[in-house]
Length: 306
Image (cartoon, rainbow, N blue to C red; front, side, top):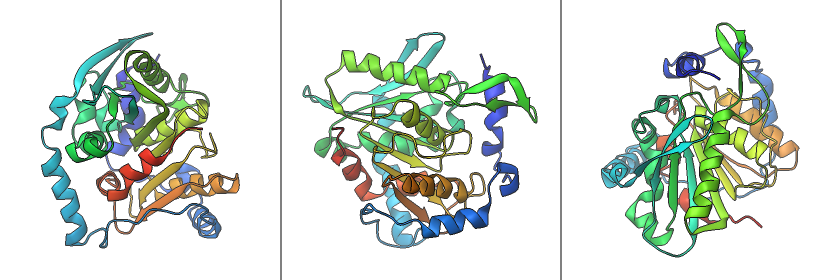
């Protein structure tokens, strides 16, 4: 079982902002770009917010979100799930008593730990609060669950070290497995629309989303991923029928955009119809743009599992 320190060592390069060359990540940027350019988009991407990513008009949306969402973290109850170890999590409950969707958010490495707080803080404010905004709850009531891991979301082999870091291996991650146990537990406790359970995450959490949809195929009605890292063995073809909207900044120096391009291209070649949005000039914090897209929430809740 990995310790928190080992997990932090594993993902520490992302928080440090270090860019790993393509060759080191096992990527061929030129080939990836060419493959991505040749891959046809079969799904219609909803209209994006007006303005270039760095325009005052677009940045104003991000600032407005910060103001409107201030204090919402206090509406998430602190809970703990006991399994092989204890996984803290936060739960936002919709005010309605009707059956409503459930959204699960997977934090990035900035949320690693066991304090049951960091997964709601820092860059995680966008992916956790957007669903709880009063306006969104009015039109799209839902419950929101935010688990916290101290060992990452994907599967590691702590006995096999590469450059001082545990090796990522195929299979459902231990962190992902406990998070799914929490969802299954909430399905028994709350009035949840079983056809509308969604998953979203960023960076390390984005890799966790790829891991989850691959190893729990058909479970989620849709997935939204922000700059999913290369810290997983999934190539993008898992649960091919699950609607998916992927976001990445083309200036990302932490997780190169080619990581997303490769997965999206592979998914399309396999017959999937993912949406993919790149923001020109945006670095690793693409979640600020993705979760403030006016159409994202509408798109997510329009998806239903058959």
